[in-house]
Image (cartoon, rainbow, N blue to C red; front, side, top):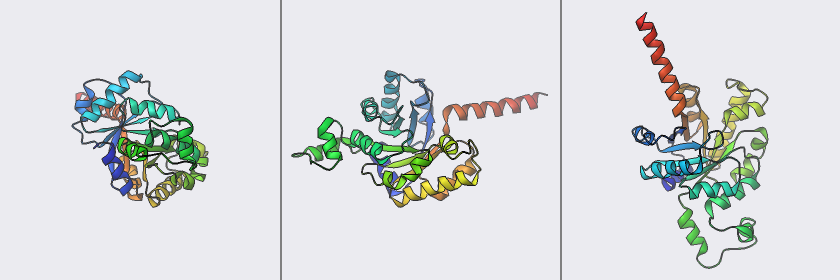
Length: 258
């Protein structure tokens, strides 16, 4: 599944499945490719990846038919276009709190390579593109996916305006930051957290956008959000799954060897 198909699935409500990939090993894509993923989530906000290495990862997964979605360091339109130039099929922008931020990112992701006052006039509705430029932009950017992180109370308060921005394809809840913003850090069973997640998913799906949460705390909990309507399913990460499997096997071996 590449960007255009992934975007269509998100907007139509179909579920797509991926995981966070940390390892840049050249042997890793072959193993990942056997897992049946629709996309991989590559994070540059919290993971140290240089630009050349990340570009190799993006182009490799794209060649395998797995859409690479990259979270940029900050909600910066220039970083978004840089990652698309590196081969990303889509962008996740962290800690979004205003519709203006999303509008700027939509310009970068859906209207590249247009920049400057030309782009700003279009985004603010004060000018239209001449000739066949819009048709060209729709063609070259039709497979670019835009996802924004909703992970704070101010973001929830502005959610209706955020979801109304043309070009936004999905929202992804950041559970850790959201619990901190709610004043209940890492209390993922707290009723206020569960209500917030439910509300975000419900509003996004009603607006015709994809919705998901990056959740690594168990399949039962993740299924609860899928039943709520989440269709952007980001399951755990390669490093977490490796750690859990190795720890489980070592514990079993130690018990068997006693």
